[in-house]
Length: 167
Figure 1 (cartoon, rainbow, N blue to C red):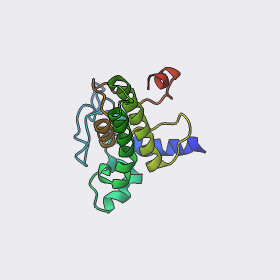
Figure 2 (figure 1 turned 120 degrees about the vertical axis):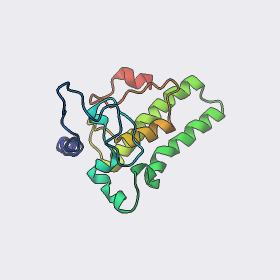
Figure 3 (figure 1 turned 90 degrees about the vertical axis):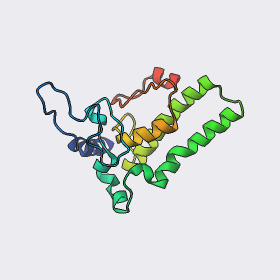
């Protein structure tokens, strides 16, 4: 059942994605934000990640309420931000070094993405993934930045044991 739900969610996202339009194979969405209507998206490296919150059917109820971007919804901000308070308190108490904090932030980014996906689409089941809107990626990266700017981006494959141990 989760698999069919994932397919439905993926098709909702995929249906908002344009088909490659020029002979070079370059996607018109990659590397720019011309497709963004909330004004909070960032350029993404793949067509699959290059979409705005306003293109996600399950989020449209928030725009009827007057929000211009899902990142303005307090409920979402709380889901993502509460963990940041914890990380800062650990660091302030000297319980987490800067190097450890980098791993904590990576883990928090992953958890924030999962929280958003669950909040928006419900549980997709183990190993099932869909990309988040670019504006949500921008918000989460801003809250839990990698000091070197190294981000994984969306991956369809589940985390490997190495990924988990490096978190």
